[in-house]
Length: 319
Image (tube, rainbow, N blue to C red):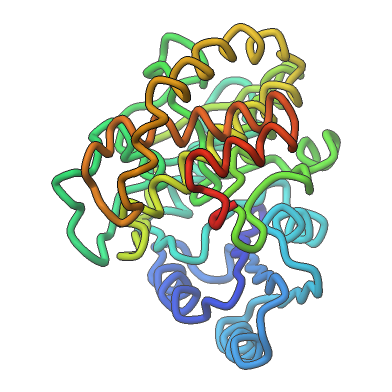
């Protein structure tokens, strides 16, 4: 076996069931894949369902008593006995030729890849609201670009980044850089993100090939609760925080200080928008920008400033 498929989950056996159904429908025989299911400290009822699902689908089950998506992904990498590991979010359903496309992409002539990001198409649990900013489809972990090429080059649109909902990594290369950072990624109610971006950019900065291939497709189940103004504002707040942490981790702190004056200006100019109820979509374009600025400022200037900014932007309850 040259490919391990890793699904990390916390209290969501229903989504895992759909994901596993997609894996059973692959054009490759099941024997061509090794399957690891990482239970990230699920509660007892969910844990029991996950044990049953693992047994039914011939998956190796790894149980972690401490939650955290980065910890779970690292556990999957340490358990892999193949050259490559393909990460799927528990709410992602792979297309029937997903695994076959991965192996074809790995075998393509040229430098062997250390990372391959794939296409992520939406599977809506509720219609996307008309008020949703078109520029923010990506915060729902959607990647619709067709094509292929190396990340951060002219081959691909500027700003295109990998998402771990559909990400293939060379196991030895991942382990060599220390895996996913355990101070980043989703944990509890925190929506910190970019842990996969940090890994892929570190691999690229180390001289490895990291590329995108839209032939590798999954369908991401977009939860209805995420299509609400309050979720979007919380998500953008944490994205502002994540951006600062990622730049510092990648040794680019100067860009944080260069951008900080603009974020401070946005926070001041759009401050009155905190009077709009969080569940309202009114003036959402300005409000998400204020939320992002608040998260950016908190991470840039420290937790004490951050607490004040959270109070000012009515995000304390979500932080």
